[in-house]
Image (tube, rainbow, N blue to C red):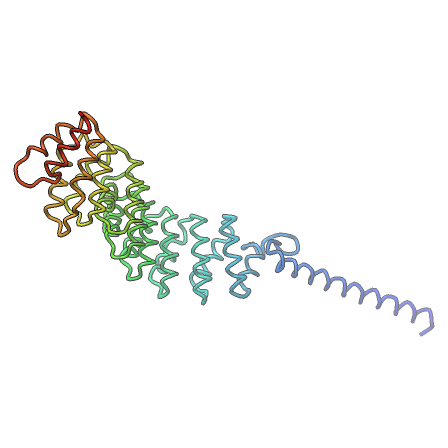
Length: 337
């Protein structure tokens, strides 16, 4: 082979090698771009094989922290292209934290398709996963969601019951309201607080009675405060519910709050019922609540002339009354000195 042909072959081989190196470099850069920014869609920016974008596939194939971040990004973007990715992660990922992230994201997508899979996760051994399933079911409009939530409302873990209570706020069904009524009397204050918050978002009779019960009966100041705030938003319409709630109260603080609220919200429309309810509340209670009479009289005195007839009745009644004659008479004098 002459020298000219040898030179030609060397040059050709050199260009082939350079081309291969450049191609490999471009592929490597593209792959690094997918992993580093979490937003590339493959080399051309498209989905892989017509499925989810490649950044989702790559992200859900990474370490737990990357899988969680990917799920959170899909949820934040409300990207329905990631529906199957999230459903698979929620169902089969071995890390409960990743399952929770996938469930949270599915809730953000609000698509009813994965509801059966989420229902199954409502029976998962990890309470955090069950709570996340409840939260997701609360955000998804599906006929299958409510039965699962009613089961979660009876869960043995307080955190799960609390999540179930919050989720029931979105279900316009009497069974949801009844479940909230039960949860509003839960042994854990945190669960009761969630139930009160959910009841405040509803307008049905059962939920309003639950709010009145917690304001007048609960022994936790935080629960009473939130329930009272919700009743103030409702206004005078809430007074009859308070009247019904008072007789069962064994909390002096709750009884006094109920009295004050009933007067504040428009107790004149139910004043006789209010007096009777307070009387029964104190008579049935194992705790006397020694300052209730004086404070109830002062509360009614704030009504002004409208409160006078009820106060005179209390002052002249024979036998034991909630006011005590002196307290009632003093209240009348404050109105008509």
